[in-house]
Length: 306
Length: 239
Image (cartoon, rainbow over all chains, first blue to last red):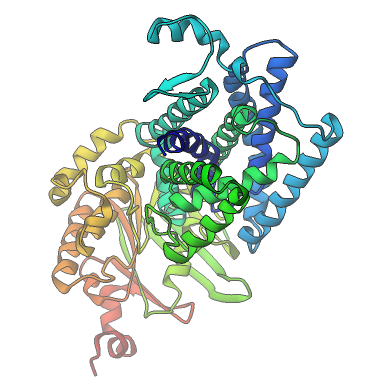
């Protein structure tokens, strides 16, 4: 019982990272980015490229993926979103637009890279840090399993969970300790009031969209290690998982995603351990259960009707 | 038609509405520097629609807005505000942010150099907010929330403060307190445009525009309004 619980927390922290970008974008723009999982999939290709083409530790892919997709997010925002928001029904149009965008990303990635599954050996993640690990925890400078309460866990899971905690901490610092972050929370609190206050809502939204895509791509760097392998079609599953994590925590409250992620991760590991043939149903069962029992999510933030 | 050079705000022939529904029909209005103008009208007269089109929340179909001599009709909201106009909506505050954050956001949004120092100045005018500065705005009573809304709108040190029904949802005691605060702001040289249905605000007004069915039915001084028999009947219930 202890093993699936600890593994569930490690996976859960990672799932928080998977969902937090989607929630940040929704919180600020009231738009569900249905292509979120596809940016995650592209992040996995960044890790794969860093490892196979450059021969580097896939962890190097984290800053590269974040910077690359932040810039891509900013460009995409200025191309797509202002036009979208001038439409009569931007919420409905955003569903169609981002669904189409998701299909285009998947199709283009399939054309370029093919449909075959790709993976990276688990021991390669954070291999360059094994010396640091030996200095902190003792033992030899290898990238072997981590011992937690006497149980062994793959180092890649611990690294993914650690990076996820750091990323969520950075989102917290951005939202609560920076000027742009405070303006972002103001937009999340009441968008129309933010416009009426004179906040440049486009600037705030573009930053949130860039950061959201950057975080998705960072989560993608760890996808080959958390799920074993990936293909261009992986994006749709990742979007569904992200959506469940976000709705579980609280739609529109990025930090609620951390709770949603841990609940999802623990449930995922318990089902994998005791009822593995049912594991694929888990996201949908959790989604239906939370919508029936507590539609505003576990943290219960009131969600405005757009 | 060129804008009136003496006006801080000059509105000419504004038509506005939502979708296929037109709400405002050829509205003309002006506010001179240091003036307090009351836009008086019943529920549904078009007051909020007018203010929303003034601050750029809805598009203007015809007509123009000139602020400090510049045509702002097609400008986005944040650029209009940077010319020295702030807006207190009926909701007025960000409920999820603390009181201090609300004040700082009001200042930061328009590029104030020192939002922290400005918040301290505002606590001097609104001491009731100082003790609760770390509390979320949602924890305030209706009257206190209105005070925070006024303080937030003042944070960027505007030349013109535009207010949508500052008396809405307040007890008569708090309405008097709001009027007292507005009177104090008037003394500091601030220009005010107040949309209201509460005639108590005539106390601070220098001129009045009456809006009915989306059209301006009267404009003049407070004395001229009280001399108008039809308006006296409609708004004061007097024969």
